[in-house]
Image (cartoon, rainbow, N blue to C red; front, side, top):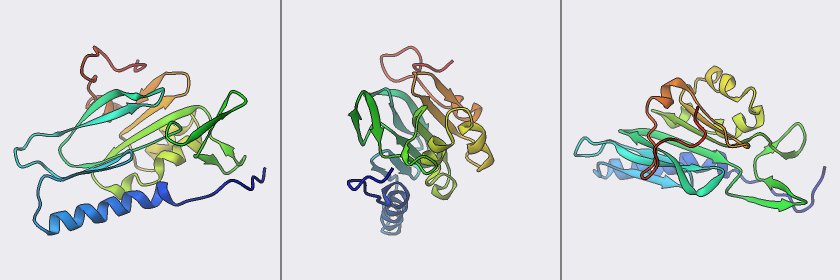
Length: 181
């Protein structure tokens, strides 16, 4: 399983705290109503007009499209998926979320989106849910204390926790959220 071209980086774990540090600096400088977006991770403070931010959740099956819109007054939306960094080799998607048991890309979940008030509640749990796999991810996330979760299965089915399902909206021009039963 050794691949001399494989590299590890701390991006999935380090990026959200870096974004949080930026958010803290802005709020300490007196900037209000801040939305920080860093490649799938969004951190927000309340807007001055009291309206929620509208955060788009990308569709893991069709990353150029939105799957859903999430109104967010404040907090964090952390998304992980196999659609950002991948290559197709022999008809198989080989991506950057690695299952440590096999040394290969995870399978079964194309994307995970988590929502919480605090970054510490969800940081690194999206890739961990992808490693847990489609049959165990939702229960495992709840056990880890991340009850607001959206799972995008490889086959197109979408699964949302009750807490998040009540908040999600269909994107503009769509009547419903694709794959959400």
